Figure (cartoon, rainbow, N blue to C red):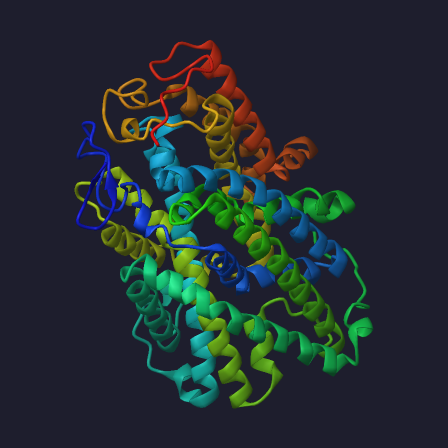
Length: 507
């Protein structure tokens, strides 16, 4: 292995310039500095944010009990921890990012498909999170200067944003871009020192609700009528273990794919496994409980359930309270947005044309698409956010996760040809750089969920069968695509490794 100027370990055996740059090359040993606490802090900081809060609070707003809402979130995160840890293994062992890892299963060029699917979803999330952070800043400034709400209009009416809202959104957008362009070390610092502060903010909100209603009992006594009209509500308890569970799994289904982007910086496998295990499920459980319990308490305090914490915090107290709360939410949103929604798409876009698109260029592409997706329109309905957005993209990413894990652990048993991931004509060339078996497995894994997705959008009327399948979209795609991929690779002819054969390990 040779070293680039960026300190990456670059394969020597005929690496193709179309397949490698300094950001996609394996991480050198001296750069693998992330320990257990770094991974734990990463997940604590990513989990404590507004979309996590609303993952449980919006279920309570729709009439679920706090226990059902929290249960679906906790169980979903325990489940998704397994694909996260499994896909992390290759990143830590070989020092490679997510787009490069997918070359083993999809081919050196076919890997662009899962990389771009993940990138597009992340662009949507980047825009949503940036809008949430900008909205928090807007509320903060409005508490200090109410005139921001009546600034002269400068945008066309069809944009749907006032001048003050747009300025706050763009200011927060610029802050996200600035931090992301500084690279992985700044992200590591931000996550490590932001996590303790975020826990204090979340705890303060819970204490406020506790004091206002007079104890934990009244917080959890809000009646649980099933007020929603969707199929997931009519299904009763089945919804908890269907759409609710699937949305909780899909919530981090993005990171279940792109986690090698971070695990490749781990010192050891133990660091990434233990760090993620102590960082993700407990934090999601705590924050889901806070979201569910506080939303339940708002029915007692205000006479209506309030799922949006920004709206809730704007009602709590005077300007000082609002300023402190909104500042905390802005910090929480920034830490999550950079880690979860910038690194992966930046690497994904770079993977398409490594010789032309660097990580920093990928960051700018992600940020610009995030604006063009009009995120303030995407994030206007908490129910749609859970039951259409989360489950919808879970139907796309679940099959990718199934194929990746089946390929790495079952077909190859953890052995990759590192040089082969970066060159044409090697073991991952398949058919002109594309493994059509993986492509077919991906399509067949997505297909059963399409009717239910169209029904969720209101395009067609969904039958109980199609809606039921769609409520389990991530699981259906994961197991169906993974199984079909293994069968195809062992039965059908391919230029890559088949019938259980694996290339020589690169140590």
